[in-house]
Length: 71
Picture 1 (cartoon, one colour):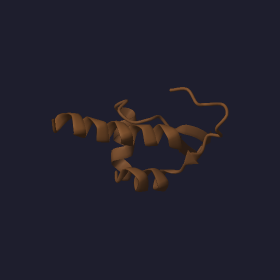
Picture 2 (cartoon, helix red, strand yellow):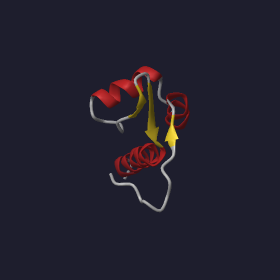
Picture 3 (cartoon, one colour):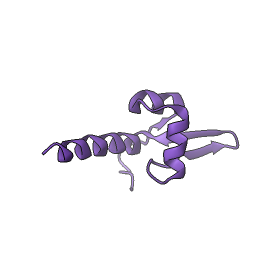
Picture 4 (cartoon, one colour):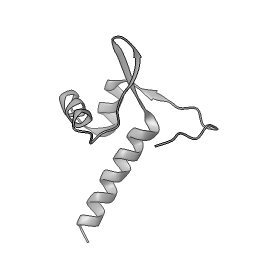
């Protein structure tokens, strides 16, 4: 996914990702490892964050997936 250069990217730390998605910490990391959740951006050796628009896109895709299954 490419970012729109006119909109500054916002980064979310893990607690914010967990809050937006309803996922537990271990589930977020397991999904990232499986390639089923957006990859984190390394901010430093011990710090990571996620691009908010990528997380929002993942949530929207899950809702769409649900809606398609219910038809």
